[in-house]
Amino acid sequence: MSGSLRFVGVVALLALAMGLSLGVGVRDVPVAAWWPALVAYDPTDPNHITLITIRLPRLCAGLIAGGALGVAGTVMQALTRNPLADPGLLGVNAGAAFAIVLGAVLLGAQGAGAIAFLSFPGAALAAAAVFALGGGLRGDAGPVRLTLAGAAVNALLLSLVSAIVLIQRESLDILRFWVAGSLSEATRRPLGEMAMAAGLGGALALFLAPAIEALSLGAALSRGLGTRPGRVQAGALVVITLCTGAAVAVAGPIAFLGLMVPPLARAIAGHRLRAELAVSAALGATILLLADTAGRLVLAPAEVRAGIMTAVIGGPVFIALARRVRPGAPA
Image 1 (cartoon, one colour):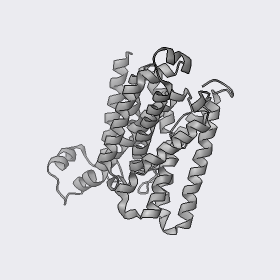
Image 2: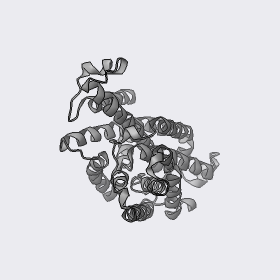
Image 3: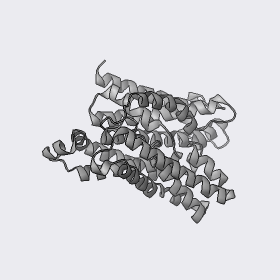
Image 4: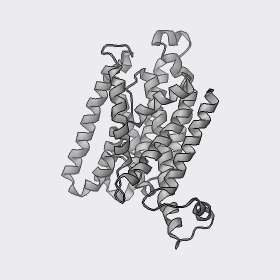
């Protein structure tokens, strides 16, 4: 099957996931009610209320967070040449969540929209710390070393989140959201602003893709090709910060999504980073929407958070990938 046909298949799967996200749940919304709800909203119609006030914001949050984490994971793996790189496993999600929780406790929850923007400096600092601790600044960030550095930073930040919540008992509701990500609070999140941040990150990733591919050949060879490794690494960290920060701001920390998507994208698009990024965005949104829909059905009428569903799927994937990585192997 050609690459274009495979991409069409990915888009079709995304469309199916979007349809299921809108229509399926504790209360099913028939397809016939979708268009009338969009063009002639009736506040007395239960189908219209469910679709417009609950399902549509969740769909938008899933598209933003899933697509952004797919792009962030692909850029991280391409930059570090590490198949275990993922914003969740390497502590970037936890950094964004920690910054938001700290802001919510210090500033109060009334400014939820403004506090969401704290995810960006939190993600940036965590990404830079993991990259530095893992040896990225010296160009020797092996897969195992980078993963261990990320695991340490991730554990530290999540411990700090728990400590803050234990001190502030009224913040227990905050902990539920910022430890296991979910799309259930989409109506309270600044979706428009985060969509723009994720879009900017995706556009920058596409622009930097040729330079990141050159950097994967090694610092010396990439310099011979006219690439400036320091600038490329800085630009890639900006992409990771924008995408991860936007995703965490709308959905909380979603684990393993950035780990699962890049290998699938490479299998579909081949080793062409720009094509991988486009496929990764679509696949990330698809998987997150399907996980969210499944979480609404597994224990209905209760709900399993989307972050838990992705962890259930991603855990075995991580084990399978880790078994293929040899200690001391080059990045």
